[in-house]
Amino acid sequence: EPEVTQTPSHQVTQMGQEVILRCVPISNHLYFYWYRQILGQKVEFLVSFYNNEISEKSEIFDDQFSVERPDGSNFTLKIRSTKLEDSAMYFCASSVPANTGELFFGEGSRLTVL
Amino acid sequence: GQNIDQPTEMTATEGAIVQINCTYQTSGFNGLFWYQQHAGEAPTFLSYNVLDGLEEKGRFSSFLSRSKGYSYLLLKELQMKDSASYLCAVRDLGNTPLVFGKGTRLSVIA
Image (cartoon, rainbow over all chains, first blue to last red; front, side, top):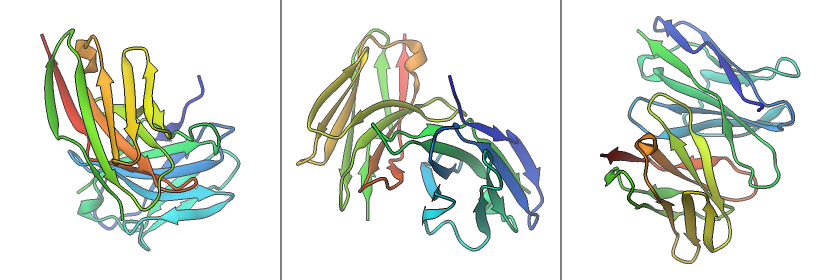
């Protein structure tokens, strides 16, 4: 069964460092998303991406965040200068704009900022 | 804005039935989703409702009343492996991203 894959599964970084989280969405999906989940809290929307551009973003997705689809398969989230409060599980998801339009989530990348 | 409410925690006995409620307020509506999330894992899709009524899928059923802004997830014949968080999520309009509630942590006990 096709799945969304994410790397790394866990990254530890120092405050102020740049981090890139990588995702390979399901191949025939057209919408891509990043969500985050701080430990013990709810899953929060960050950004959606369609047709090679951001379609929506939340207020969390400020100037320190960026997304890119550098080639036909990868979808990346970059955090320019990490803060302690960026520590969270980051989930990539993808969907097709048909049927239920359900989101398929990757296993997540746990980011720890020290 | 959007507001999604569900109970924080529930406990139920193995073999029993449990109903997890969700109420929502959104400016538009294009579907309500239930996801299951085991601790430390990704959410996995359980069910989708866009029209009023009950959708049944094996041991899991989900109900929607759009006029009341209300949904529930019904789990029958509970098993220990059903211990997880159950996330209610709503799509506002079109293909906008899903907005999740805080989740209900269900503990199934023997």
